[in-house]
Length: 180
Image 1 (cartoon, rainbow, N blue to C red):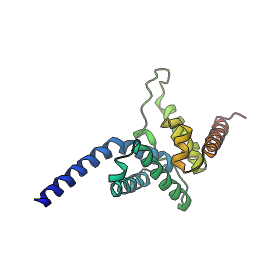
Image 2 (cartoon, helix red, strand yellow):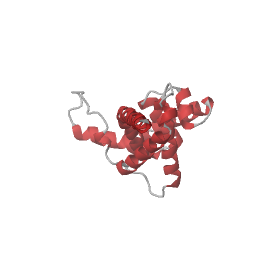
Image 3 (cartoon, one colour):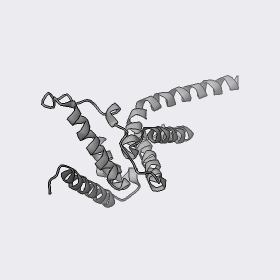
Image 4 (spheres, rainbow, N blue to C red):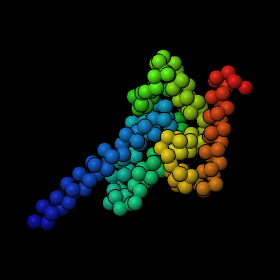
């Protein structure tokens, strides 16, 4: 009888984790793709993020903001990948994770793709910590405190990383556009 109870509990935990996974996997994958510029690496790091989540699910499931924990783990994995990767990041075309432009003023889709790829390359050229801060804040709407928590840095260091990321992005974007 006890084995039946354990089995039902394990099934219930597995079902809760599956729902948790389906709730967060797209956001984590998109974030890691933006961080690495590589679909396969992002997929591998997403899988590793959720393996770690499964190992700690009994604790994570009690958190008020388990998504923050996922982003913190994903950030550390991406930063470690960037630190140890010997290959230069390239754009794998983010079109699959980016919404299509719905602006009729942008009738030339080729220009949109070129712009998107330029933005991707500029993001990938930023130092990884600045890139993470910029993506977490600008794309995912994280507060400074949440960025600091995800990067395991102080609030003031998060503000500096975001400021530097914005400045470096702006300077590189203007340079790409041929502006001084």
